[in-house]
Length: 215
Image 1 (cartoon, rainbow, N blue to C red):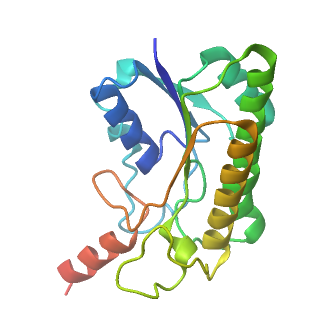
Image 2 (cartoon, rainbow, N blue to C red):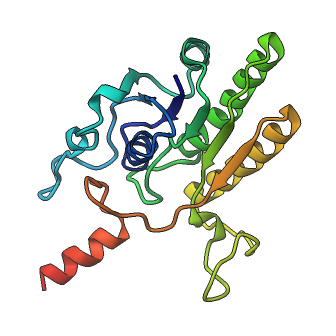
């Protein structure tokens, strides 16, 4: 049985990855680690919690585990229990602009947790030879800061302007450095302005549409 372990698995991106991997028969089961938290004030007039819809139709193929990715005991137990072929790290702050955002909070998801996961994988690699087919770290286009050209390629200069982008970039350095050092196959992804059904974090695309509808 092929398994994907997805941190932040109940999130907008994590749940969609789970759906795609299951429907495309890449894995049989997706283990979704999530802390059940939210990042938008639930008292906002237009707030809707769509998380219950994210797993419709794939409920029998997902296993939900509650916990924080930064908790090394939880991560060690999950990797040991499921021995996933794919470890996909999406758990982190979902938005650059969150009330009271600070560097320490941004660092936990993007830097500390990334290092912790890779160290745990390496522990089992040395212990009994286990290694996932691929570790994937989800970064952000915020690592670029202001685009210096119309199209930003992967080699575009990276000058983040706030805590979110700075820690996402730091997480890239950690992922690239440790995965390379431990000989763990890895991929870094930089999503930009994601949007779609069940997103409830008021990202930029949603804000544009809301303002257009309310004119």
